[in-house]
Length: 302
Image (cartoon, rainbow, N blue to C red):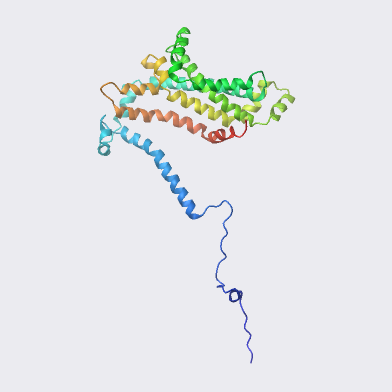
């Protein structure tokens, strides 16, 4: 009686038939160890970024101005009295009104001038258009201390000292050069054929700009608006020089009122700083969708 031996593939290759095939990593796919390290670094970076904010909120809950020297004791006596004092016994709402008028005015005027300037240089070829952009860039080279005296003289001659319009114009002189460069780079990424299609449809140059180009430039406009808003919101030197009435202080200048030559009410400063952060956070929330696209697209051409 004869027997027949059947060799399995595992017997031939010397491997166990139950061995699973090794998974091949696709191109661009990171290893589990690399993902673990990257996630750990991101978590650490997030904690580092959030720590100053959390610490400021924690200090704002301390009832005494010297609690920052012994922060451990704040935990047992937390209170919101600092916030109620700032809202009821300071000129917080006057500062809020001034800040909103100045920042929104700077943002609106600055974005309009920057967008039209950037579009004109991007699309039109007039004598000296390249030098014009460099002149705008040169204006950013002068420090604030050098510009303070001539600006004060100009505003004084125009009777714009201690006025909202005067401070808005000063801030526009700061934000427009940078935003014009930003918008010019973004408009360069928009195909010129869109302008030609607008002319074929009978649109004027301004109609083409307003109806066709601006809707495509929303990310760039969002970045310009965000930069203008933050610049006007946090500036101190010009605001403290040109706004003389305490009811017309911006938030940045109003914070200085809590510090005197012999005293510093740091608990009230911390509470005010937390309240100040609310408008900026709200503005960032509305423009965040277009910020990343606008920051990256303008650098792809020109």
